[in-house]
Each structure stands twice: as structure tokens, then as C-alpha cells.
Amino acid sequence: MGRGVDVSAGDAGGGHEDGHHGLRANALGLFESAVMGVAGVAPAYSIAATTAVLIAAVGLSGPASLLWCGVAMFGIVWGFNYLGRIEVNSGASYAWVRRALTPSLGYLAGWALVVSALIFMVAGSFPAGSVTLGLFSHSLANNLLAVTIFGSAFFLLMVVAVLLGVRLTANVQVAMSSIELVLLLLFGILAVVHGKEAHHFSWSWLSPTSFHGANGFFGGALVAAFYYWGWDVTANLNEETKSADVTPGLGGIIGVLVVFALFELFTIGTNMVLTSGQVAHNAGDVLDILGQQVWPGVGGKLIVVAVILSTVATLETTLIQLTRTLYAMGRDHTLPSALGRIHPRWRTPAVATVVAAVLSIGLFVGSNYIGSLSNVLSDAVNAIGLQIAVYYGLAGLSVVILYRRQLFRSVANFIFIGLWPFVGAVFMFVMFGKSIPGLTATAQAVGLGALGLGLIPMAIAWARRVPYFKRVRPDERLAPEPGDPAAVEIY
Image (cartoon, rainbow, N blue to C red; front, side, top):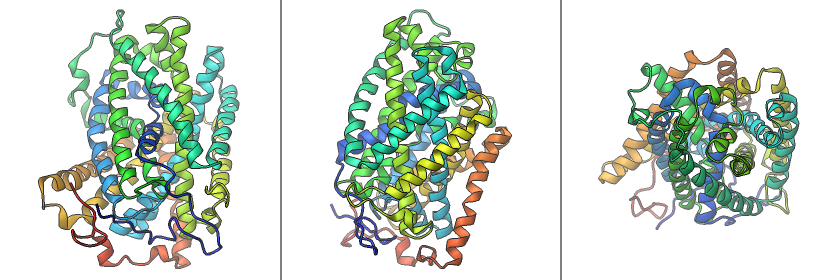
């Protein structure tokens, strides 16, 4: 198979003008990439932290939200798979959208990932503290100050792990994700076959007509997008992966297939076992309540172990996405160039990691003054949903544009490189527009305001005539043709 590897955006994966080495190449294989894809989504964390938000938005139609958003999300997954075959860059959509559309939209795509990851440090660290404290006291699990302290401690441990290298991170992820998936499968089956039902199963839970109009449908889809978010960490790790143009895309596909099945199983099981009141009153530890319902006593606490492992995993992978994107932007001088510096021994973006840690802890502690735990989680989830809709949607359009000469050469090309990514992109943009009116003022301000802040550093970099903002050549906007040494095999 030919490889469309292009590291033209900066000195991707190679040496730096200041003599520092690049990221550690060939550290991950397909198995590790797939594990990172699952860990990035963090199924146990997503279920624990977001179920209350989803049920508040759509009631019993949660399985339908995850199903139909999942169908659209697979289009974006296929898009990332083929975009990675054209250019290997740890900035991923930041580089690809620039190449296909414009440098300004590419920068916006990268910035959307940066701000969504920073906000997630709040949404992710809260359940880490809440679930851990819930092992000892339900009152502590809903105490904002106690949750902040424990969540900060969890996050700082993840910072250290990410600093020490991607190989160590991958080994830890394999161990944690294996235990997490076994526990989730066990409790998912127990929930579905549980004798005492809050609701009898209904196929209407999966129907696109079960929502209260289009606004209800897309409001649920916005939350569902947050469930799936994170699989694209495989793309941000492409400079550190074997067969860098192919393996990350396949890892993302495998990861999304696994979590899609788990999400449907658990959401249906939750509908059957828990009432809406039980979910609403335990927003931060829904899986703890579910575990006690299907396996009372010590056995039910095992699901909490899955949540803790999952939260640790997703904090790590989100920090990786954030630091690799900051690294790519620093390397291109679209953000301060110090962010593009690599630790000479660990081969990780050390400056970007420290900066991300400081910003994240500041946001996490500051969120104490926003409101209750459930409000913080809900607003963060919805704000992140808006931001990921932007960069996923732009990536979906990009693959169609870059491969436009090859779309009609086979049915497979048309579906997997053209139609499906395009539908996924349109879905993301419509979801973005339809969801905004129904959000709280805080979610709107955080989601849109954080995106708007990106215009400031972008204007500064553009005024400095940074090469990233040079006009893209027409030949760069086309995927290599078959027979070209840089062409990829399309199937």
C-alpha cells in the first residue's frame, strides 16, 4: 500500500530548528491505537457523567440519540481515516482543514479542540472526585469543594503520566481499559436482564420519531456527540504510531464500534432499571446507583472501579489531544513557539503539557463559583458539544473536498469518502445551529465565547505573516491520484 505521508505543516515528527528532537515515532501499534480510541471515549466515564444530562434532555429516548448521532459520527470517523492517509500531523484536523478549506478554518478547528479539551478537564475531573468519594459517602460525592480537591489530585497524576511518555501511557491504558470493558459488559448485561424494572423495554426508545420535534432530536444529539467525543486521539497520536498514515484511522474505527455497542447496552439498561428521579438526584454517580440496583452490596461497587479507571483514562487521552494540538500549533508558530518544544529524554511536548495543566487546574478550581455539580456538568457537556461539532463538521467536509476526484470511481469510495462523511458534517452543523437556542446562558457563553477567543491569537499570527496562513496551492487540495508515489490505496 502506498502512503500519503506529508509533514509539510511545520517539521512534523522531525527535528526542530532549535535542535530538539520530535515526538517518539513508532511507539504505538494497531492494538494500542484501538485501545487509545476506546480510552479516549471513556465509556464508563461518559455513562456516569452524562446519563443524567441525556435523560434530562430527551427522557427515555436516550438510546435513539446515541443511535442516530452514532450513525452520523461514523461518517466523521471514516473521514478521519482517509484524511490521515494524506498528511501525518499531530494537529490532525488543524492541519487537514487548512489544506482542504482555508488556513483560518483550519486554525478554528484546532482551536475548537483546544478549548473543548480545556473545558473537559472540568467535566472530567468532577466525576473522578465524585465517584471516588462516593465509595465512602454520598454526601461527600455531591460536595463541590471535596470533589474539587480529589478531582485536582487525579488530574495532576495524569499530567505526570503524560509527561513521562506515550509508551508508558499506552501500557497503562491497555491495563485500565481491559478491566473497564469487562466490568461494563458484566453490568450492562445485568441491567438488561434485571428482574425489577422501572420501565419495560420499548423499541420506540430507538426511534427517530420519539423526540419532541427537531429541537428535541438535536438537543439529544448534542449530548450524544459528547458521549462519542475522544476517539480521535488516535489521529493526534499519528506521529507516534507505526504505519502513521493508516493505523490511527483504523484504531479510531475499532474504538467507536466498541463504545457504540456499550453505549446502547447501558442506556437501554438504565431506562429499564432506574427512574428519572433516581437519575436526576444522582447526577454525578449514576453508575453507582445502577450498580446497587442490579448487584446490591459490595458487588455493586465494582462498577465504580470501572468509572474511576475510565475517568483516569479519558483525562490522559484528552490531555494528549490537547498537548499534541498545542505542540503542532507551537511548531507552526500560530501559538507561542515554546509550545512546540519537546523534552529531550521523554520525547513529549513538555511545555505544552505544563501550560495545559496550569490552565486546566485554574478552570477546574474556578468552576466552584459557577453552581451546583449537576449544573457544572450539564453546561460543560453542552458547551463541549458545540465545539466538537465545529471541528468534526469541518473535517467531514475536508475529506470530501480533498478526495473529490476519486469519489465516483467506486461505490465504496462514494459511500465511505463522500456521502457518509458529508452527511456526518451536515449533521454536526445542523446540530450546532439547532441546539444553541435551547442551552443555558452559561453553556452558550462558554461554548461560543471560548470559540470566539480563538480569533485573537489567529489575528496576531496572521498579522505576523506566519507561514501556516499562506494560501494553499491548488495541488495541495487534492488527494494523490492512484499511481502517484504518494497515493493511498482506497477501498
